[in-house]
Amino acid sequence: MEEKKIMLSGIKPSGDLTLGSYLGPLRHWPKMIEEYDCYYFMADLHAITVRQDPAALRRRTLEQLAQYIACGLDPEKCTLFIQSHVHQHAELGWVLNCYAMFGELSRMTQFKDKSAKNADNINGGLFTYPSLMAADILLYQPDFVPVGEDQKQHVELARNIVQRFNGVYGDVFKVPEPYIPKVGARIMSLTNPAAKMSKSENGDTGRVTLMDDPNVIMKQFKRAVTDSDTEKCVRYDPENKPGVANLMTIYATVTGRSFAEIEREFDGQGYGRFKPAVGEAVVELLRPIQEETRRILADKAYLEGVYRAGAEKASYVAERTLRKVYKKIGFIAR
Figure (spheres, rainbow, N blue to C red):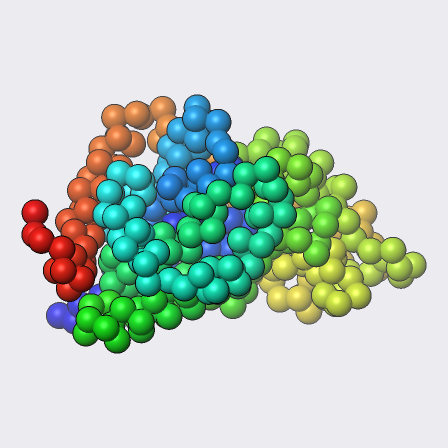
């Protein structure tokens, strides 16, 4: 029997998972566990590059794990773990810091963006976290890393580090490939369609979280930005009608309809009918996820069993890679 290729991905519990989180990466993950050997984790080490409230971080980490399962990630079919429970991530992260160039790290778009937004806390972790992300990836020798377009730069850095490290020490790491979903990969803010829907920024009034009450969801969609033209028609035109295009992307991803079908469905009806229809589709999409998340969170023993078992398996695999790296660079075996 042919071995499954390895897929790995993680999301920071730095904010509540949004509709964008689900329609982007998370929705695709359950399909992948049938085809790939998958590792999915809560990237809590990455979260602390920005100051976090400890109680909120703990809540979001466990809630995110429950949501992973509620969205279809069966712990019996994939490895679910909390990043800080697998110490090899931090250890390899330090090693890879020494193989990532200052110029490469300083060019990272997210470092520039987050430095601008957190000018009073431009810490070393914010600068070097792409090295930790490379360690997250390379510990498990994955073939593919599912990422949004905004994270593709970090996978490219990981590939550069692999080629640099392998060039010195031989064939240590596998070169990972970014895996970018074609549809619904980038959901924008409902109030600012030029910006990605954010889970980390509390000031983003244009987001919908996975656990939002249906009334809140409907309110968010009814107030969503469309455009200022006089025709008020539902037409997919990202350049001239980015707000409408974003709503159409959401509706298409949720319902499976094509843009042409959506245009026909709302022909002559204007935005007053279209926006609530998108909201209603999202409410029905999220209802079973919300119910299952609440059920899982209520069973603390089950949830603890999942993350303990996941960390045990992840640590076993990660340690094999770390031992190989330590031997190659000249560390004495423990």
